[in-house]
Length: 302
Image 1 (cartoon, rainbow, N blue to C red):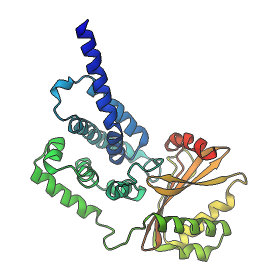
Image 2: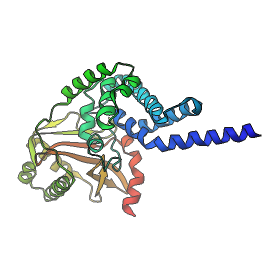
Image 3: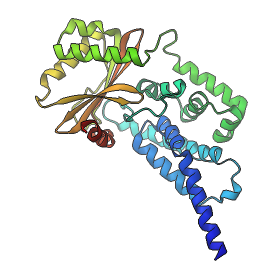
Image 4: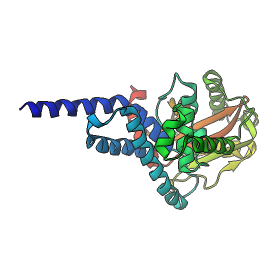
């Protein structure tokens, strides 16, 4: 009987330990995969592996769990690259409701849609090392154990990853107040249908990405240039249903636009802003990647 009580207590402790780190595990997995659904699957898979572990053999549960989920994500990314070659049109990360890093600048920046897109330029191991070091500030010795490389090698890989991502040096990224102001102006100008004013809000080399996943109508290639993007957006608005509603919500740590029809999210739009101009627009229309946002709409409506 005493053995049964001991096992039950151990089981509860393992559950409590895992739940204490669940948000961290999801945060790592989402940044690694760019997918809410896959991140949730990674967390669940990590729980199943953790449940089979003897807690007495784990000296540092946080490091142990971080290692497990990071390795699972690396394996996932290696297979996902093959699957994405058949993806119809631009692939964008799934928008994440809310902000899991509001008080941490590095974590918040690593959550943005624009940054997640930049991470697609990295190999799975480069991505893991970059995220674990820059966003989650793990030391090199711990990262080395996770990716099975030396600490010195991890330093070199991080340096190469930084070089690949070094596309915005010298540009001032917008903070929340500036982002909110420009988003407000953007929505007003779009509603007014003023082409020149809309162009004036954009960087001349702005890029617009639209992800429909082959399931709904979306631009099959990125659109480049302020005039092209502005005309495209105003053209969409002219064709929008009369009962379409628009709401502002926090996605990936920044204020973004939700477009809803009959109470259902049919698209999201996020802006990447630097030097006071809109530099990138990401539009998500793939219904599979919007499914997890439907509960968010109920909260907004309430």
